[in-house]
Structures are given as structure tokens and as C-alpha cells.
Length: 182
View 1 (cartoon, rainbow, N blue to C red):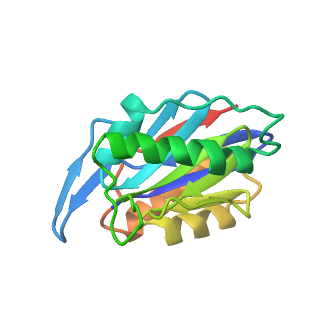
View 2 (view 1 turned 30 degrees about the vertical axis):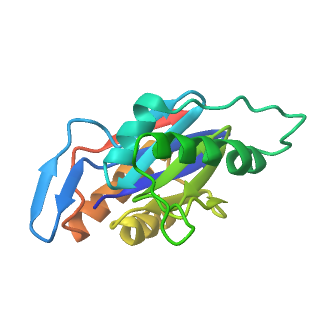
């Protein structure tokens, strides 16, 4: 699957990701397209199926954040961004209603305005309770590495977390990429 890690420091959101794509238990390839991408004021990291990321990377129209209507970044993400993602993925054929729910086959780590969020398969949106977070099959190892490297600069922490995940998880592979928002 993957490892995508994020952290917030000094009002900036940093995301890092590996480059592996895996199918089944034994097939892995190297992706040319990065798992991290910008769309307007949002920085995305993605794991899971590749199609939803393709659709969002090309077609997502990020709504305007009206501070009079949505006081916090969290409220804006839940009310506007998640709905725009759902509509975009639905129009792209990546969301299909099943038992009155519209699950997506991916999970996203999203940076916005100095905040770090996850958007899960059920389209729930949660803000990180720590200053760091990881998603994907390498998440547990990467999260431990982020915790162990507190006090270091963001980029070296992210690279250390991704390297640890690659060392301990066969679905995580270099090269690693790091982007900053803010």
C-alpha cells in the first residue's frame, strides 16, 4: 500500500510519501506520479486505490472558504471540502452508493491553513490531535518514528519516518517526496 506522513510546525503543513504501488501480496511497482499533490490551498497525500487521487488531482474544484460562514478550518473541511471531494469522485465514477453509504477506496491526509486532517473511506474528516500523523500500511512504523524524532526539523523527521516504514514494511518504497504548504 504506502506510507504518507504529515506534520505541522510553525503554521506550515509538511507531507511526505513513498513511491510504491502494490497489488496483491507479491506485486510492487514504482509510481511516476507522486502521492502528494496540491489542489488550490490544499495539500493532499493519498493511499489506497489510485483512481480517486487521479480524479482529485485533475478535477477537484476547491470551494472558497468564507470565514463568516465557516469559522474554523475544521468546519470548512467538513462542510465544503469533503462535499466537493464526494461530488468530484462521484462524477468521476469512483464513488458508488452501497447500503446508503458512499465509501471511497482511498484515504487522504490533507493539509490546509496550518492544519492536518484525515479524510477516511467513509468520508469522515478528522483533524490530527497530535502535530503529526501517518496513513497507509506503513503508518504505525512511521508514526513511531515521528514521535521518536520530536525536536528535529520537519523534513529530516519525515524522511526518517518514511525510511523506517520502508525498512519494516514491504509495501513502502523510495524514492520519498516531501512538500510543504504555508
